[in-house]
Length: 318
Ligand code: HSE
Image 1: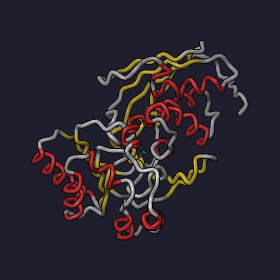
Image 2: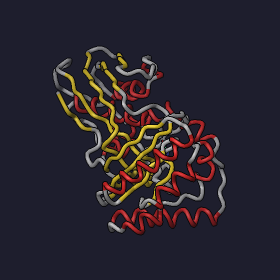
Image 3: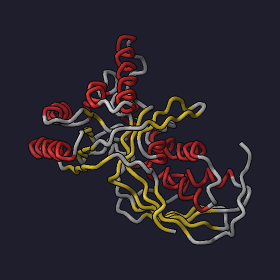
């Protein structure tokens, strides 16, 4: 790819963005499906500098690295700087509300937020596909592999299908206005570890079941068919392996479905568990069920009852 340039005066203003949490995989669509959440979200302030450097300030208590090469937002900004003809840099303040290692797209929020904010300061010279490409450098740093199932919905909002990443082919999928309940048991599961334990070979019969579910889920979203969405939220490949890392997983899933959730499962690589519901009352009942299970097990947790975020990363102040 060639170099890009921009012609705005350097050092003007800054931008504040909100970068949403995301649920990747959507149970059956490992690495290819994801949706954005209205809560939680990170807050980032980014300023343009006239020197090729990235300065990072963490405004939270997560002690993430501030060296740009070791920081998810930092590597994204470095990749943007590399693409520019002009000598530019960025200063960034990051206030994370999405806990790292939660399974609700913490690294993607940092990566996508940095890419969108930088692009805004540069006069929106990059396309959404280019922003996804830049942001995937952050996912590579965080999990060892480029994947876009958090990044794409984080940038675009709504539900995203990543048909392919080489070359990039992202399809936005319309969806009913569903409610999402998330429980985050307070244990950390590193995405890189949760990927390493997966089997590299799968049985054809499992693949057939899985791609039936993926097609069913996408069709269910497009046709507003809630029963079909519920039936398709089934994973015979990844969940049986990863759910072992999540205390109480089977109990939470079964009891939430009994309480009226359409279905759900592991959010991203876990340990968060999400459930989709058709209305807020059911989503709130589902939250109570999640709390009961983790109170009984004796593990601290956070819960969110929220909706699908349709906007993606949002510029809230300049
Ligand atoms: N698709 C990725 C995984 C998402 O499941 O490893 C990580 O958040």
